Structure formats: structure tokens, C-alpha cells
Length: 80
Image 1: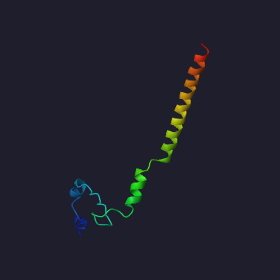
Image 2 (image 1 turned 90 degrees about the horizontal axis):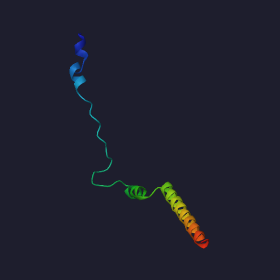
Image 3 (image 1 turned 90 degrees about the vertical axis):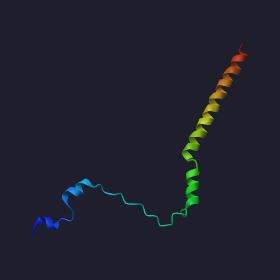
């Protein structure tokens, strides 16, 4: 048998076509939200703990700097 009989499609056609991406499969019907939607919504709406820590540290540090500047002005006013 000739070699061309073993090929399922012409060689030129395979080189020009782009492979198609598989479509995602959803186990539920499109109208229903996922079962864990309330949990996912809570996690997405929650601010990360690291951000809370940084905000707290920055607020404390800013108040510390402000208190130090206030102390400098109070002590400077007494010495005049």
C-alpha cells in the first residue's frame, strides 16, 4: 500500500488549522450558583490579615510621630 493511504488528513491542512481550546465543563446547570458561593463571597470580601497588621502599625507609628512633634512644640514653648 502506498504511504498516503495511512494519513487521516492532508499534511497541508494540519499545518494551517489552529487547535481549538477545550470548553470548560460545568457540573451544575448555568442558572444555579455554586454550592459554596456564600463561603467564596465571604473570603473574597474579607480584607487580608497582613493588610490589617500594616494599617495598624502605620496608624500607631503616625500617632507616635505626631505625639513626638507635639511634645517638641510644648517643650519649646516652655523654654521661651
